[in-house]
Image 1 (cartoon, rainbow, N blue to C red):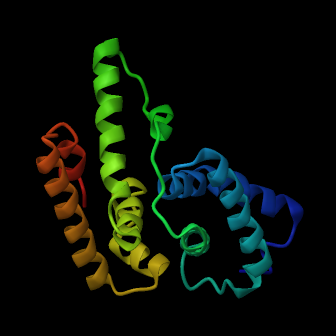
Image 2 (cartoon, rainbow, N blue to C red):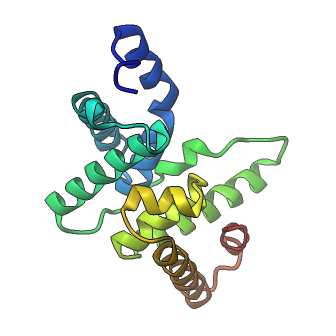
Length: 183
């Protein structure tokens, strides 16, 4: 596979194809757009430095997200404390033909879910981001996080349970729809 990814144009194509997904993954983890841009660049720098290690045993996307996971974990370890979430995800909410009030309520609900997400331990947060937000399969998530599929299933279930408990404690039922759609 690495012989196929050797021209500048192929590298640009990979970057264009996966940049947004990697960026959204990183911003979900860091809660900071500026940091996410830098870390996303770091993901692709590491990818192109390590492309020779890619043997084609998994999808390229899975390989890229494994690198993204490592970059996010490295960043988290560097900071050694939880990030504080602002209104970062409000920009990602598409506005349909809803009233302003409905849009505001929807944005507030999403913001609350992401606030609750930040209260999870990093391993649970990572699984929820990969499975629930980025919609990776159990197998892909296990590959990216380098753990068993059983561990992913159990941890994902526990993480969602903790999120639901937090919502009940806070009296927030609006965000539960998102949690109930989890795989």
